[in-house]
Length: 293
Image (cartoon, rainbow, N blue to C red):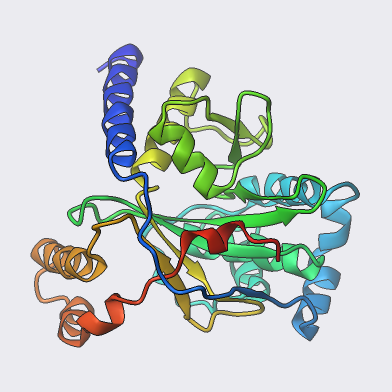
């Protein structure tokens, strides 16, 4: 298959995912919860000293600082989608394990944590967002970082794994909600890399941009967000889903499918035994994600 044939397939898939988002553009109502952001952890001082976070971020707006951090970390953190998360989920431990170590790759869950805590250490509101697919038979999802930029008065998505973000027709960087809406209504949503010198999987830039549009459109159906954004990971999340979407049924079917693919997996079997329908009915209002921190 040549590049043009591959791009045609990705374009067709992108259009399918756009259609799914268009037909599910409204989110279900939920609780008026809140998200917290904490900047004063002592570990953040160690993070700034050990890894020169302030110098890497340099000066400028919160967005510009976050872009500089993304630009620095993206080529220095090898990717391993099968990373088993055995390192404590905090930036200090993850950087000690993986920074500039090609044989010690980590996944998006942990890359997004490094960027989140680096921003929090600089008093930039930052959170991890799980962006999830429509199909329960899709075993892939993605985790990115959103930061709040006071100069633009908005949230902005940045992704260390793909080394970029999305912008609108005017070049304004977008939040996850805005990205979803742009895809749903077939509006301009451009993928922007933070640095061109990073080792590339794609030689064709048009193919690369199309790939990431397709990938993010696929994984923009529903969201989970960390409730308490601070050092480490307490595991508490808020959930945001489209109207009519049953998160319990989706999760149960997703686990059953994973068990079909990985028979006798004890961890998946245990999760299926523990799944509680009442817990999965807890949802939050999507407007929370647009609030000023």
